[in-house]
Image (cartoon, rainbow, N blue to C red; front, side, top):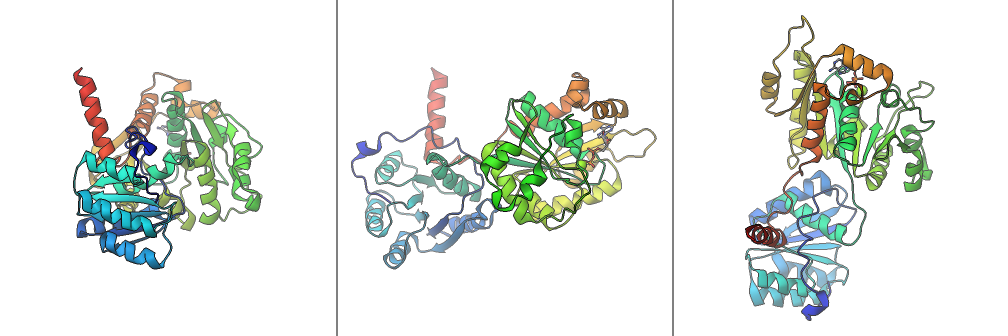
Length: 426
Ligand SMILES: Nc1ncnc2c1ncn2[C@@H]1O[C@H](COP(=O)(O)OP(=O)(O)O)[C@@H](O)[C@H]1O
Ligand SMILES: [Mg+2]
């Protein structure tokens, strides 16, 4: 923490900085939080347990600024210190001054205060505080604030991962992953990478009519050679905005994957491409579970029968238990309306899972079969097809709206919305 009494040195508060950056995976940093109220302590405990903080070393304790000062007299300061303070005004400023004496210059300080006071906020910024949040603060707000510190420092942006998994094999999970990825890149102009994690049998190459000589297996098994430039070389440019990480789809070796081998590959792709779609095989083992748990968003694809419903229910239960601060998985019902097949009505299926129905796609063997055989996407085979529209809607629903709250209670966010209101009035 640096003391900078001269406000000019810091310039105007960066009004644009607050609300832009969302909560993504935090880097390997150390964080220590000192709270004064139970509510803030509980929220920060929850942030600590959140998947986005899984790489950090984070501790949360009571005692506020005083406890922090006591500790840092003896021990080194972490990358981020989070301090809750009930005191406002001069007392808080005095406390911070004492903290600055014992705090490393590189340590970033986030204050959680109880006063919504712009003057105080400015004075805090001038004293080198990185961020001021107004209580109540949710776990994701706290993580988002920490993410912003790193984004502001020009750290690499982390792309979002979206895992697509079928409730059963053959329900069209890969078809949905590819078509939805295509829609995101073609219609929403997003940069997208599709990673085919079904190493022995994946069809991403076939579906896009591409035959890359190398792909995801070369990255997963690269060992020490794995780095950004290797990933860049291996990612196959399907179009300007869509890259493909195709599966080898050969059986000349076994593919016993470890999460420790898959995770760094996904991470590197995320550092290069803003959206990565993980086409998951229908299996259940350690790397699958961990990969799924670590994804930013999850799409469950199911066909409307009882087996699918049971499996989808188990998935949803597991996900909601372990991902309490994430939005719900997106449910896609596919292959709806197979002639003569008794089916569960899509709405009932969704209700049974307590989920919104993100998309419903009819069983159309002629259209899907032709597209698959020609190595085309549905919208290429027939732009006006209802299924093509459904994939576009899904892309909009997932990429168009942000995930959890984006630090809506930071002062900067509030200032921004006030500025916007004033502008709108003019
Ligand atoms: N809505 C649909 N109507 C007809 N056939 C479909 C539909 N969706 C997918 N298919 C076909 O179902 C088969 C299995 O699809 P795939 O995406 O490989 O499933 P999964 O990845 O879940 O195993 C493919 O032949 C695909 O073309
Ligand atoms: Mg598949």
